[in-house]
Image (tube, rainbow, N blue to C red; front, top):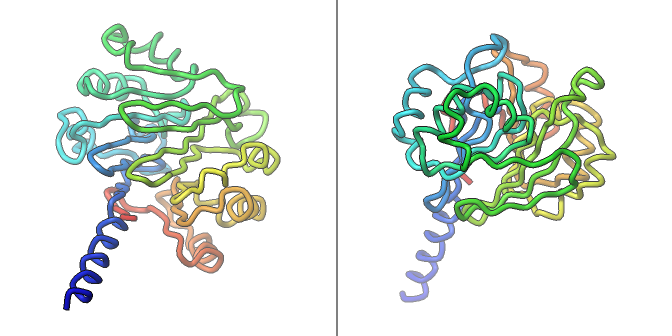
Length: 264
């Protein structure tokens, strides 16, 4: 009887452990990570500038600003790049102003945008940390959360070379979550980063990585994540893309609805 009880307790503990990381979809590439009392918000502070992609709803922004659930006590804010479907100056600045506990980590380009355009930057300056593009791997520990970050060119070739696009590996709740922003599918760049060394549990990637030849090489050979989640899915459904993803990566999911959640 004791052995059975012990086995049941171990099984129950395993279930709890499997659900300790929660990912909530905000919009486009915006997500909220939650585990063990820590919260990380990535690419979620923007408006409806681009109509083709989902943006945070007005009531969601209101909850963010008022620190209402699930946006109470956000330890870390990460922004991959400056495009308006990932980042907006006033929304980001106001969030940091209202969340005294939050620290923003991003590129110098994002910090410069806040410095020059956010009217109350002095009130948040001490909680804005940035890195210079060009360093291979950067390491930070902010509010008890470890982050490995790196720069990869933004998708789009020469016309987007000025965009400082970052990727992040976030360690939270004993798990490692990768977010690529709008990273170009440059196989040689991924080879140089050696991201598989981080033993990635969940990779949040632009959904088209799972439908293109170069993307599949990167996913299979360079990331090797246990779970794939597609993001940046357009409002107009791409059924052929979803079918290809289901065929190639049957365990993968694609975030398509605001406030979808995934537990791992």
